[in-house]
Image (cartoon, rainbow, N blue to C red; front, side, top):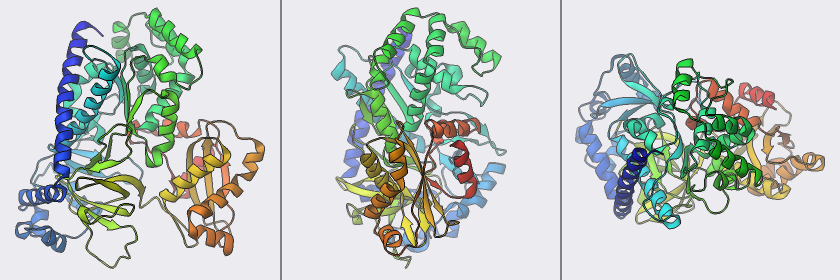
Length: 564
């Protein structure tokens, strides 16, 4: 970094360090009176929105308590808001569902055929800023333990900030873009990416850009993505293309095979210069061993890796630990959706998220709810070890909105529950009376890994009802090749494990014969990465890509079979 860049970097890091410690103090203070904070949020939002169309429809002006709110306002989903959202998109009309000004629409990840557009208001940015500052303070604290003097250092932040404008004049894009929109001018000082990389179109090979500029910066201190899968893919790309990347850094060029507009290539190459010393350092790092522990060999100051690596992303968390070695710490960041930033971790390496009581008003439906219409529970009524569906009311006009996320309560900090994501309600396998959730799937895969002694990099499941009797189809990709003997016994191993994990499966498969033996398919190494790369080519931002754990239809099944 140049002297002025280092100075600005230190100012930003130290400013966020101070704000992050304040944010942590604030979170812990709010946790002591969590339900009261959440109730205050609700009543403030109802007062603000009482004169909107939605507010008049449900008489927000007469609601003065949580009980009133639960009696008068029904549970909702996206379809309940779509007519209002469509009007906002087309005309820019305000005051329909919230008294706050809607200044952005967050696109959902594209896991369903119809793209949802979730309204976002300015105050939502504050929640993201506090969490980002908290993570920065953790980074700063770790750097102080490892290095003397004033702390500095840029990082690799895999972010997508490209936006479009609706016919009504409101910007739209992915939630990650909104979360950083007010920080764009500072990003080149805290990330290693050039300014031209932010908001690029599909005609740019962003994987190359990220890999090249990350490798070029030998003083990089952190790596960050929404999901750790994006970072594992980046590390795989670096490993597979190291010769080209080292050559380009040594010569100060960009390989002619890399896709990007001529104007962008010209701007970037004008500022690049040959760095033979850094190229030699990278070559030595790769020559010193295999991919295990490669990150600290490439970046001596690397301190923190940030991103969601729990639940269904646990395999990617383990893969990043393989790349990172033992001395680099992990922050599992935050639990967020386009609809709300629900929770954050308070300590490094902790996989439990603390619910943020003033980022929304939350209700909870027990996993085993019989549909009898009982009133959803509040956070003070939750039990440790139980699963609940999350209902959220936010600042942007969603009221008693069913996220369709199921969480497991792991404890409490003060009066605020701590939680882990369990599964999406849509990600459930129903087969011949079998009810199999992602919790069952994750645990069965963990036990299968233990049984075969090989890490499973990725997996998907499909309920094959065309087979007679029905069966589960399991697709797995392993870190190393399996022997033919193990491959042959995989169905036997998995059926035995699934019978331990799910009593219904033990009954329907083992006792009744209503479910046939599992069909297990071993994917070629790199297959899932190719699927993610194809999604990126199709325009889905890297931070929005999730592995297809449960295959819902034959179209998805055929696509996965082709990837084999």
